[in-house]
Image (tube, rainbow, N blue to C red; front, side, top):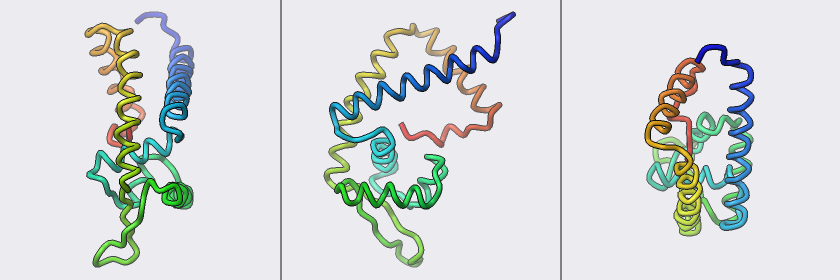
Length: 151
């Protein structure tokens, strides 16, 4: 696109990301009672088979070890997660979903699917394909690993 202003495009993309984040926060607070980061962690753990090493959460969510520990502590106190020691290495801890965590993963997944459908209805098949290619290209250029997404 000739004459496109990269600065304006970046700001527009950032604004759209913030708008998506806020909408997800509203949906999840209204329907599930939890924030986006907690739901993202639950969905990530569910996607990985209901348990992950706690240290795996750090790069995915771009949070420090103490921040992850605090989040997992809170989510454990709320009955969403529990920790298990890893056999053979007492330093490692596995984070596992409780039944309440599994239920939250199902509920939030259904609620977010409605939002995804709404967004998808705004784009036709070619738009979706083009946007997907653009996102992949930007992730590659900016070295953002697509494995580091939780939703």
